[in-house]
Structures are given as structure tokens and as C-alpha cells.
Length: 113
Image (cartoon, rainbow, N blue to C red; front, top):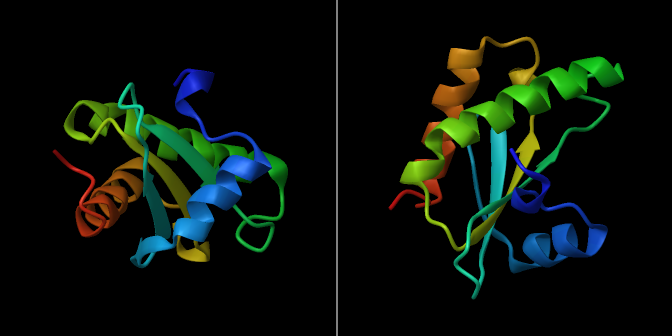
């Protein structure tokens, strides 16, 4: 996933968080914000040290989330910023389980076209 598809700065994270359009399931909390520029969606991922203490474990989860979103990208709305907050139950899950729970959370957030 290219860096232009990511929510990177603290200000961008705070802007999406302040909109507070959120849904949650067992593994993820999803915050969304619609943008005026419909070029492509942007994704931000946040994982606390309480979820996975070691850095390489948090990166492992982020990679699987990014790959799952990349596979779903043609089906998703292009004009949104998405924040994914990872809960502890996502730690040490299979890729298929992570993708299934992301799809469920995205359906709750009405992010599919």
C-alpha cells in the first residue's frame, strides 16, 4: 500500500477521531470520515502496546490489516479516511480471521460501494 493511501500525521488522526463516526466489533474499532477529494481512501492503523508489547508483533498485525484492506480496496468507497484501532483479541490471529473481522466492521461502517 502506497504512503499516499495512509493517514500519517497526528493532526489527520485527530481530525478523523473528532468526527467520531465509529463502529466496533470483537477485534477492531473503526472511525471514518468522508473527504471532499474522492481520489482514493486513506487508512490509519493504531495498535497499543497493551495489545502486543513487542514492536515486531505490532508490525505483523499492521501488515495483515493493510493487506486485507488492499484486497478489499476495489469494493470500498474512495472518498473516506479510515482509522482502525486494534483490540487485544486480534493478536496472534490468522490472516483469514483478521480479514473476516475487518469485512464485518467495514459493513457495519457502511464503507462498501
